[in-house]
Length: 354
Image (cartoon, rainbow, N blue to C red):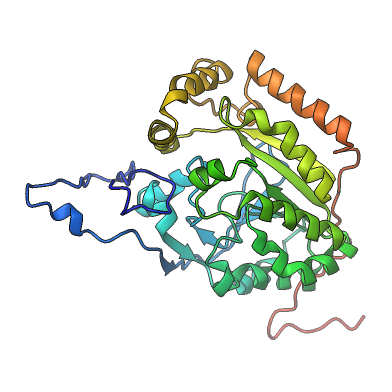
């Protein structure tokens, strides 16, 4: 894909999804008509899902339910493991994932309805584990803010993961929830290198803005975590200690990391990006990735998919642990409570006498 057409985007191509019977290829027929094609612009359609809470039974993650206010993510992080989900919509996990988005404007109402169900039992809801709830279109759509308002009224715990400083917009709600032990926020800081961040995560907040967000959240009394995610060998793994140090000084009290994951189409998209931007590191990066994935580009095995295996993976984990210990991170884990949960009252529902 011509660089001007995908300017400000992460993926280098827009191959058809894996479920499509046909593939469309841009082909120059000699008339130079490709030069006339418009650049990729962000479009937003409405997601008409009838439920907003997604359930999972994965044994290696700490939550069993999550919410994604948006499908696709304009941040354009080239390594995003959520990219393959766009294939379910008949769209490309490449440029389509970051330019053809779906929003769920009814999410707050749907959430309130699901929380009010007679058989609903409260446990922490995770938001931002697939696509970022604070991506640029949230500034106008305010779907995430509506979701937080519902959760606050219901006294329901929530854990948030984001790369965006926009999360500070909702400090008023988050600080009130924090006083009741109902919320924690994790900021993903992948690199402190501005050039690498711009290339790898073109529309996410800059590293200084994310550190500033950690500081503002911490000062407001909101439990804040830094996530070094993903750790990419020979690209950003040398920054682990510096990222943790900067986040700790900003006010983070917990930390975690995730090794680069390359499921399905993400592998080829990351390979294209690496060859385009860091061709001298291509072989070394993939050699190290395979060393940590049992000789493969990706291993989806539960229990090891987040951290990898082998000497290199062990070394990354040990460096992370030592840095956290020196900085006093993870000494106390924030555990949210469900004690305040009260089912929302549905329209027409009779109120209790007591």
